[in-house]
Length: 131
Image (tube, rainbow, N blue to C red; front, side):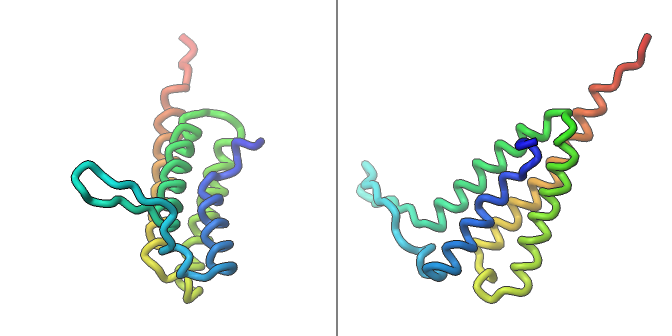
């Protein structure tokens, strides 16, 4: 039943842990810098890393939504609950009213909508007529 756990909960918990622990300023902290051949310097902040991890979670959620297992319906319901958690926190918590958190919430919304859509299409192809 581990497949029923929505992966978008990982960035949600990480954001809240950093927000409550170090504060919002920690998200703008530089993790690494890479000098480019053009002479520019590319920097990655903690906020960028959170978005990147959310996109990786979204990719694996899309892969999970193609499966027709007993846990997939539970995964969709829990993914909807994670999105509702994002939405409620965005509306009610002052430190969650950031562009970073809004982007995470949009990724969670895409996870919900795409998960239901992909599962519905995959389930339609799994129906056997019995001829």
